[in-house]
Image 1 (cartoon, rainbow, N blue to C red):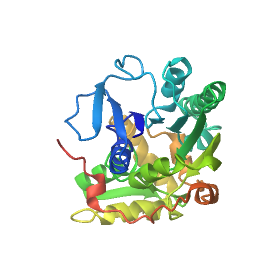
Image 2: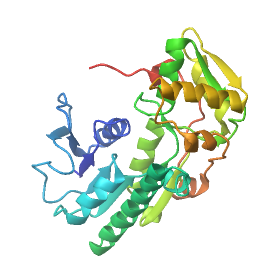
Image 3: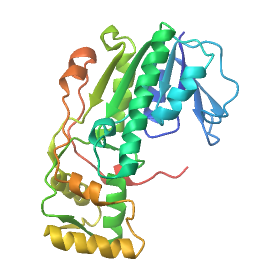
Image 4: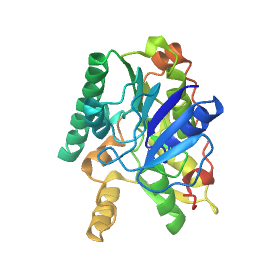
Length: 288
């Protein structure tokens, strides 16, 4: 019987990953900041990468489904012996590298440092590490993009975008990410590699949002505004204390094609993500 240690086990990617591990007979030790209900085949540890106690001396695999930079620091100093590490990062490492927003550039830099740190630590321990970079995540109402859009549209029954929001996107479902993480475990070609994990369909930003809005009951209307008019509307929203984290860099990115090559992941571990077919349930948070 194999044993796994999962950080971020209660998160949007971690939960479906736990299901896959349990179905394949793995014994799982999962870490969460909050107390979790009993789960067959899973022992929960309360804590985070700074304070968690009760870790084993050795496991067969470590998964990181949370912030990569924090995991890299923990892994570099951790005494836990493990031959296999799979860690999630983000395509933001590339997308936000040259952003006009200093905070976004800082995020990209932390992701780059985290990736390099994990690979270096794994090499020093003679372990095999694989890094996974999802694109725009959805499916468990835990993302900060499509779920937020759905919430605003559901409240006002409408949503606005600039008419030039035509940049390409590849939204990826959390279940496909969990499947990918599990699939890399026994794929030697993935050792020491980094993979983009796009969704199975490429579509324009405005089309992606329109599909989300069509799932709502009643469906929300999408308004495509001239860019100047949208900027004026956004300025009013900022003045009212709304969407302050949506700045000029994010606005400009709506015009950019953020599409990534699926072939390396498909070739090395059979990655076959689903097309973007959202339902309302994917954007509604479940309450325990």
